[in-house]
Image (cartoon, rainbow over all chains, first blue to last red; front, side, top):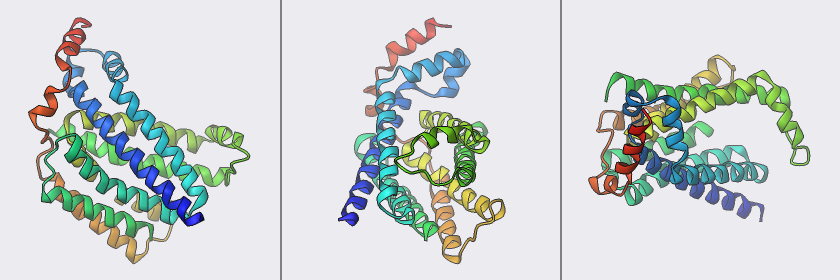
Length: 126
Length: 146
């Protein structure tokens, strides 16, 4: 039962952080190149522009859900399982979600990079 | 990709790993937190290591958002995962933790993954995705603030 809770928490962490990353990425693409914006306006108005973006706020909510599910997951399972399992699944999930929802061109190179980093993260925790 | 943009990516990796290391160092002072004594979590912020770690993580978030404003998610995430390598090096040489052979293998795999994307294009989103953004009117209003 404890096992099921742990993997349930991992699933929620991965889902929430992939959702958060996709929303934040979408938000920042709408905001536009921050370096370019800074040339034309003050840092405060750039920050205000980011904070007013609805995708940004939703992204923060998703990230908060991910953070608190991580805390719950860590209280149910070992840190050496929960942290690397969720981090590496998030890498692979993000590659799929970026292709689906953000229309990024995820070529073989990027798939391999995501997979290698995911394996590396698992080994780091070992 | 300009030199400045590589600096931002380096910042994402560096701030995240330094921030996490400082939090880890600080939590060793604070001790384990139980769900029934959450107030100790609030007091933990007074620990200088924790406070510094939070500042670094805020800097990480600003750099991460800046990078996402001009690069793909599938570029930023692998490119900045070099931070895991940094974290392992900090763990070994600053925090004096054991880094096993398996961990060095993990570091190697991550480094190969990073080098795979870092050489490729940073932004590949199609125009369709950009046109969905209500950027024109917002840009106009921002221009007015000048």
